[in-house]
Length: 579
Image 1 (cartoon, rainbow, N blue to C red):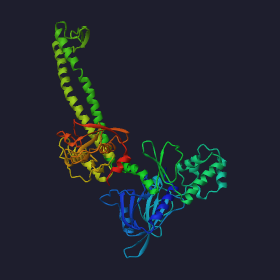
Image 2 (cartoon, helix red, strand yellow):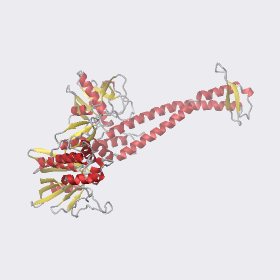
Image 3 (cartoon, one colour):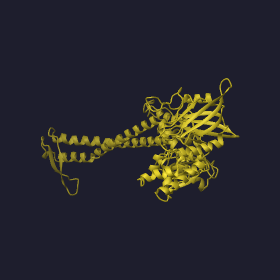
Image 4 (tube, rainbow, N blue to C red):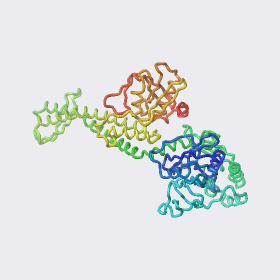
């Protein structure tokens, strides 16, 4: 659902109960469109996230710490100067709009108390975050809006803050029965009740409107009013029940501030005691994917270009190999011409000869070059045979090398889709540069890859207490398998698909069956098959893993192994993760 006005009210109610008089200790801006306020109140630490992302705009408390850029953004520097050390005195929703005002009392350079306000507009692609003074004059804005962007409303430093333009909709909080029934009765029946409600009333998302329609006994004006007023009473009284709905693959489908019944059993509904927790659970995966794709757009583009080029190259090589498969035919033609050389004359364009090499002795037609003698035509076919024979050997080797390159590129693409921070993206970029795919190192002149990495492998602990490490990219995979693990530790990897190297450290002990299953599940979740239900995972001791000379990062071979089939359950694996 959209982050509608009712959800804003639920979040503001929760923040008001926890953060009034909270002290702002630190301010971070991990993304260009997202700020984090690190707060402390009544002996508790809080992280308030405000995002103006076009796809994932929201405000909520969070427990996720994101990596900060090496150089802070200008808006972050301004917030630190104006707000650090200040205390939050008020958090409120403006009317029934998707606008939150956070008032902060801080001190200026002379020690005098000053009032600063943060305005967070949670409006999809029009979302924004602004800092103003006590007179609502804008001091800074995360996304400036000038005349070239909007003719209706400009948001620039030095201007006075104004509310977003009204959409000429009615506030559902002030609707009366007479007005509701009169307006709805005038257009009844309507093709879509939820569309009618969301277009008439301010701040109602299509999900909320559809839930009102679903809970109504019928589409009659009186029945719809009963459902509408019950829904609005929940908002007025603040009796929120935050939930997240999951589809059959356990992926977040929707989130809401009330129980959602309209799916009628086709989705699983999980209830949460905190609105912020429900919002964080829903946006966690989506937000990570979106931001990773934004920051790594050039890498995705380069890798996909490389993959397309390799696919085209392999297709051409296979076509050439198919032509080279005629080598035996060329040899046969040469032999038959030599066997019948006395009956062939120069100037003939073709000849029909008996094929004595087949039991039925069929006649076959052989094309000739009229400019050549019979002996020269025979030599022409023998040369074609020799060329095709040599080409077959070379092409088969080239196709094998292209397949290995594609396998490597797929592994990099898999690592890139699961990267979570700038450091991990930098490691992948560094790997591609050293491997000669991004131009800094010429192909065939690669340097040894460094094992001093910026980030560490993901760490898990099995139910039996065994430490499990999982590589996040090919550099970490090599380091983990050939530098960190001992020969008797157990190594896991999905079968015949890109994925992380996973090592269970057991110090020579024999882990239980449950430990092996959990380690295999970790390998399944951290792979390109993470969405599959039943995943084949190979596992063996590290002593059986070999790396061919000159192989790409992350590429290994093994011949002695076991295989297990496990469910790729991210929820179980998350519980095993060590923060």
